[in-house]
Image 1 (tube, rainbow, N blue to C red):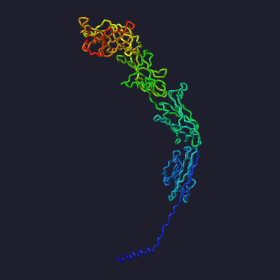
Image 2 (cartoon, helix red, strand yellow):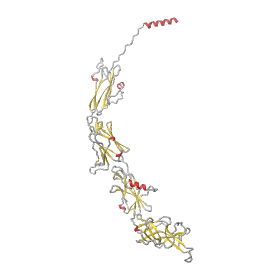
Image 3 (tube, one colour):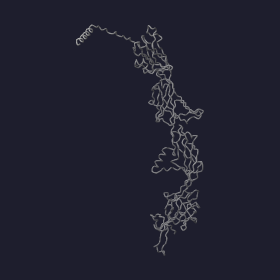
Image 4 (cartoon, rainbow, N blue to C red):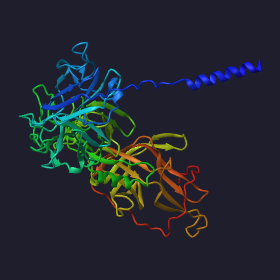
Length: 602
């Protein structure tokens, strides 16, 4: 068995040594030339391209795309996957994979019918376009990519087409487009014109220019054939209409053809009252404006500084006597003058009297000759009343179309003054009314008393003083203050005005039980007494008890008399006598205080 195997191996070795091997024939791959391509400019918006496949081509692919030539993968282009964006002819892409049909079955040479020529229109002036082409032969060999580029011409004068605007953080941005790609020439100025929608010529209805400024070059740029303009915050006006103009040659196309001047603003109203803005126009957003009692911001700030020490703001009072002539004026805090009130202008007035009664009613606001807001009363408010008002939002507009915010009179009031003078209160009065009866505890009518009021000898204590206190001649005057506008006589609390000595002993020389009684003006409620003068020469107070308070000692004190529901009628226009000098040798106590002890009748 082992010998047999060895014989077979030897035979195999002999066969191998006698066999001659022949190599397989080598396959020759034919090269393929890229198609011949051309691209020529036909006009500002069209080019002509040709693609001519070379001998041996079975398939070729081409694409016409915007831009200069750039590297493209040949295999991807042949498969229609180059990634280029083809231009189009009548909605058909300028890209195709073409199979070559031989002229005869025996020939693979391309015929003239297989040369493609394309006229491509609707292109962008002064822009590069490139044709790309690649081919393959029957063996699948792919050629290099052939390219040809050309640029459209730009022989037309560029012109303005459209613009878009956007306002952000008080800055207005323009983007201005043209019929051709353009560039800034650096020649001439871009001018901003400022208008107000409520500022126009009544005859022509054209808006009147308020101002114009040259936009600095650093705020103007060109990119992608579009001009971008930035209007800085310095020129921001709420509601303002703005327009741009430029001279000829401010912008040019790529071949330096100048754009015509743009000078048309076109801001005007038509016969129907509609505003036409046909220029390169924009408008800032409206911003409502506040109203104020004060004419200037400085006056308002000064007033508020003075009020800082007060716990609450004390309004300034405007006094008037003729309600029909009164104009309650509000001043606009707008950036521009007021133009007019609106058709829906509304306001309301509130009038309050001393008793707290409030009457409110609507009114139609107007304007002063100076162009400020005016609110007038619709009826007689009566003397001694306080008037305020509220103006609804949107009642007034400024020349830029901004409307007022709602405003209620805050830092001022309007007081209907009696128009008195000090002479209206000085004189001698006949006083009637009731006196508290200490025995019955009820008020009863008293015999007429005398009240004398003269001009003060010390203005710091009051502008008038009483020298006869309801029948008691004053040793020291009782000071008071007469408000000539409100018609109120205020008699200040706890004033000493009289003293007398009461003998207590049996003989003139016996002074052991003598007492001195001091008389003080005082109101039962411990507050200043107010007498109202609702008509000239008549003072009255219907409800407050007041009178002469006796002070002898801490243990012995009380009212000598208390009056109520008094009416004092002037009987003598003269000031009357002055206070009677003291004739007794004593001083008024400086530490006397009212403690409301039982009433004393001396």
